[in-house]
Image (cartoon, rainbow, N blue to C red; front, side, top):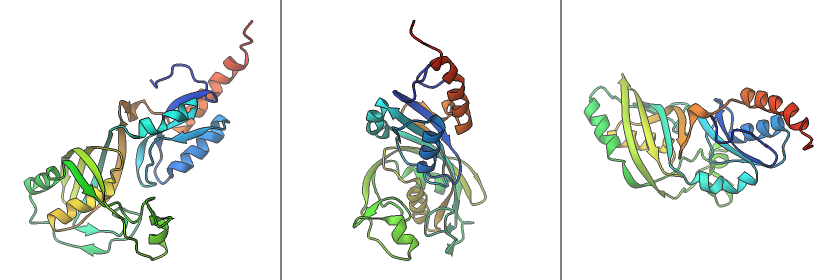
Length: 237
């Protein structure tokens, strides 16, 4: 169940939504705004188009809590591919290099992942919304340009390798705000000397908010339709 038992979407609510693959976070905000017929709405933490999972929406007076929610610890599960790299560090762009991985053991990969735990400096991907001289980095990248992106201090609470099949590695990460899991995949590949890119990402938790409690857009629309007669029929008499 979500945080509020009864919703007043216009006055204010915190909504847990499951973002579909290929949608931008703004796509989901726009579609949610239209579905609920409300004016004031925002999201608490961007998800890349090729990521799925928990996206928290705040409406009405609860938009004041967006920064508070964004600052909370994040949890992700996903998969990365060793031995290949892409310019975007994920599937948005084509593979641009290949290296052997047969020599790597499970112990090698787990040790490399553990080395990133703690406070680290991380460089965001050029295919990201980071601003460089007033421009979004992804716009610079997609126009063939280069950008000098500064590193950011982040915290990786845990980076657990959960399974391996060939050069496909499944993982679970718990991290601070501002962490780019695509950059973590790239950095792990560099640490192992073979390269890597992110092939799947699911955000499963933000603070105490969990993906298993989230709704899809159709469920949210159905909830709104269910509540409208009840709300409109109440006269206060």
